[in-house]
Length: 444
Image (cartoon, rainbow, N blue to C red; front, side):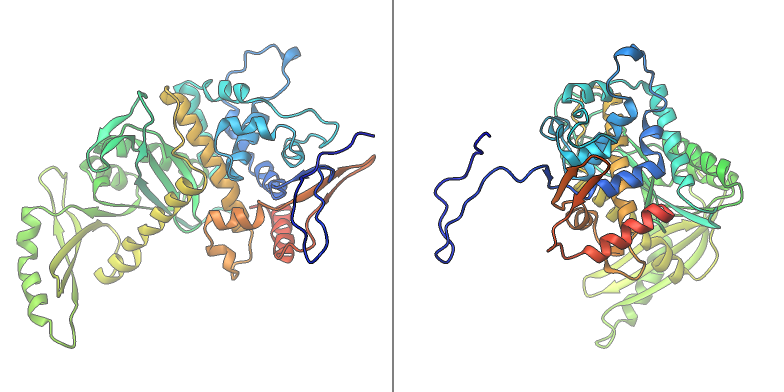
């Protein structure tokens, strides 16, 4: 027998010496990735992401399928290992080997970092287009039945560049060279629909309309009768966007940037609100609806004005919509809820580190963004599997990861089975059992 290493010089505890050796067997600090594997298999994430990739390798010499590599990368990201070279320290991890359907002891180790890097640089723009459409199809398949209505929240965020990279531009508001990817989420479920890498500048009206056209048409291919509400801030409002949404029979509620004409219209309302302020009503808010047509619009549209007077002064905000109802309801209960999309983007950026787009080619960075989108799907599926009234439904993805993914596990491969032993002191045993049952029985 070989003697195991030990940690020397540890201080005793209540008179008893401490002995620390490296003979605990096959352990992993990421036992929850086994549950993420079930979500990925039911969604078909790996196949949707790698199906369009051309595989010109000699089949007799292939050791790692593209789908296996993508699955490993997405689960790594979901577990907090967003750097591609983290795979070199996880190749023999028993939990990650199980994720890829390999035996923890006798199964082959995972792929290396160079192998994953070659995968990320494989896609061209045609393959990326098909992957994007596949992910929209995946979103639709994630529903058991067609919903009556969905809400598409569209927004963008800054993604700082890391050198001389394609599509990176200096962005004055963010004060750095960056990309400015567009993200589209379904607001009521929080499910991602599309993450599109693009130059670090404000999107044009033609570009926004083109993106929405692909998304809306693909969704309608699955659900011809679904009502679609598109929601976004003022820089997504353009003549091209309005014309497309009207022609496609979509509902919309979009911010409208203030201009001199709108200031003139709002001036008497601002005065009225300011006059009505008193010691008992330090804040006065009123709503008005009217028809308005900018010079570049093909026709007039309904505009809702939110007028407010406080101790800090008066303020006016405007939205354009084709929804019926009271202006107060449309603004406060419908439009302002687009803040949900900002939280979803924050979840994706902070938890999956979707801004790890350090490749020189934009195609490789777009493929990386799809992988991070897949990692978001995994963590979001874990969160959605929690009971509706539990506190986990409103938890951040970081909380979900720390609670249900970063769990120590002992893995023992026996002759006829593989045993996973989680800590007896794990405080969320019942909830993990409930979530796993919901995933394996009903899907995410």
